[in-house]
Length: 244
Image 1 (cartoon, rainbow, N blue to C red):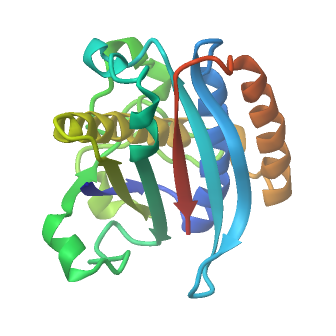
Image 2: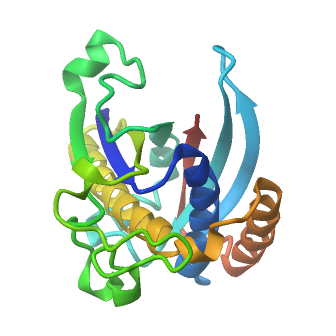
C-alpha cells in the first residue's frame, strides 16, 4: 500500500472552498467524461464519522478504457484482480497555508511510510494537451474578488488562504504488479489534483456567491448529465472519497 499526503493551498477561505470544490468537481467530471472514459457518480451523500465530524462521502466509478497503459489493460480481463484494487482519498481543510502537522492524525506506522508533498497550483505543470491560458493561475484575475494572478511565493503572503490536506491510499494486492500499479495510480491522482485545483481557482467567478443549496442543485444536475454519458461496458474502477 502506498500512502501519500498532498497539501494544496488556495486563495480562499475554507467556507468558500466548500462551494468552489463542489462546483469544480461536478464540472470537471462532466468536462472529462465521454462515452468511453470518465466518471460515474455512484454515491454522493453527507456522512458523520465516529468523532462526530460531518463530511461528504462520494463513491465514483472511473471508466478508463483508453487512458490506461497497455501493460495495465492486459490485467483487466482477469476479474479476480479487480476486488484487490482500491484508492481511498481523505481530505481535511484548514484556514492556513499548510502548516498543520499530522492534520489527519495518522498513526506512527502510517507516518513512517507517508510521502508528504506540497502541490503549488501556480508552479506545478499540467500536460500540454490539458493547458488552457484561461485556467492558468499565474494569468487569471478574478473579476468578482480581485484575487490573482498568483505570483511566486504567493502562499507566504496571500490572504485569504486555506489548505486542503489530502491523504491518498492506493492498494493493489497482486503479486508481481503491486508496486507498478500503485505507483501509476498515485501519479494519476496527483495529476488530477493539480488540474482540478487550478480549475477551482480559475473558475472562481462562475461559482463565487453561490449558496450551498444552489451548488448542490447544480451538482445533482451535472452528475445526472455525466452519468448518462458513460457506457456501462467500459473498463472501470471505483474510488471512495471521504471529504471531512
